[in-house]
Image (cartoon, rainbow, N blue to C red; front, side):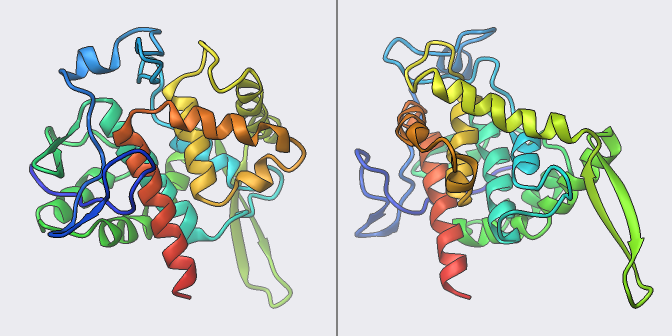
Length: 263
């Protein structure tokens, strides 16, 4: 399976994302094979301070829970923002796992995507439609991935369904955390990791990606409402990600902003 993923806005310190020949991918993978690039086991940093994949893993579940009220299950941000950020989480997970690489200025799927929630099948269909603009790619997947994520969390028992009838007698349902304390704990733990400092040796790429997606989705003010002093730490932690991961974060933020402006 081969396809393209053209980048969005430029990242400070990187070459422009928009060149004289049109859109160019702004990301640059760290040289070397996936094993040497991202390390193994509990290794979390490269010699130059960049955060590595290490024991990072995907952040989809935490991102979904942090974006919803732990008591009622109500979404705290626009659904489009959640969808784009969830796709970004899966895409960055593929980058850090070595499933993707940049070849000739485009993002190429090196192996069959081993993604949950049905995303692999949809992304394969879209990737075959090369070249596809990144904004379109994200928008299409963003419409479906929140539902896949919710159903997967219900199946695993992290969420459970509650039903009721409204005043008109119509049945309504929602998926709420099976343990609201656990849902809140995920947000608290991430803030605690951030409080250790952006350059903490215990920081992982998973932490930085989650913080970056929270910011891209417009949740940072809500998440750090009573902890505004941690905002600079968040920026510093994101800056320690490899350029390719930061490029996807910037793209997600750009697409979310453009979707809101187009309303």
